[in-house]
Image (cartoon, rainbow, N blue to C red; front, side, top):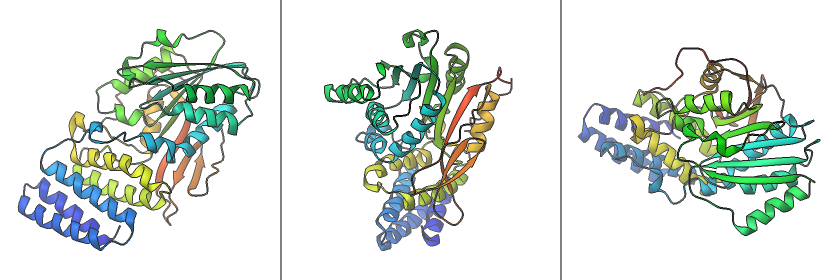
Length: 355
C-alpha cells in the first residue's frame, strides 16, 4: 500500500479520535480517490476495506459475523488447508508409536471433516495407530452430509485405521462439558486449536477456563495452536490501526486465494478497526505474547521439527515453532504453528487481555 494512502487513512482515523468529523470526512474522500487510482485489485480492495471500517467506527456501528455470508467457509477451504496440512504433519509425527489416538478439534465452522479426509489420503504414515477418534467441538449447529461422511470413512479405511467421529455443539469453548468427550484410558489425546484462542480474549477469563480444562481435566498429551502472528490487541486504536495496515498489506500481497478469502479478512479489519470492548473479538497477538501466556498457564513447547512445504511463503523455525512469513525483504510475520505439552500449574499473575 502506497505511503500517501496510509497517510490519508491514519489522518482520517486521528480526526475521528479527536472528534473532528469535518477533517475526517475530507481525509475519507482522499482515501477513496486514491483507491480509485490503485491498479492492483487486491490493494484497492484493502484500501476500501479499511475505509469502510473507519466509516463503521464513525457511526458507532459494530459489524458482526451475521453481516457476512458465511465469512469463514471458503477461507477454510483455501488458505487454511495449507496450515491444516502442517498441523496434520505435526499430529502424524507425535502419534507415532501410539495405538489409540483421540484428536479433539475446536472449530468455529464445520469444514474440518473435509480436511481430515484429505489428510488421511495425503499423509499415510500414521505409525502404529489402529484406532482414531475425532471429536469436533463446534460453535454452531452442523451435521455431516452423507457424501462427506462416506469420504471421511473411505479415506480412513485406506489407511487401515478404525475411525470414530462425533460432532459436539457447544455454546462456548470456555464451558465445554468434558463428559461429552468420553475421555478413555490408554488414548493419546491431541487438542487442535486453529484461530480459536485470539477470539476468546474479548471475554473475561474465557481462555483461562478453556486452558484449565485442557490442562487439568482433559489432560491432553499435545495441544496444537495456530494463530495470526500480529500485534492487533492494543487498546490504543491508532497503534492498532497502524499495525493492521502493515500486516494486511503484507498478507494481501501474499494471498494466492484472494477472491475466496478476502471477505474473511474484511470482517477482521472491520472488527478490529470499528469495534472496542467486548465487541472487538479479533484480538491477534504476536508469537512472543502467546508464548508468554501459554507458559504462564502451565504449558511448555513440544519440540517437533516440521518442514513447511509451500513455496508461496517464507518460514522461520525456532524451538519447534513454525513461523510463516511474507516474501518481503523484511519477512513480515503472518502466522505461526506450534505444539504444546502440559508442564506445571499456572503462575498467579494474569495473562494478556488488552482493551
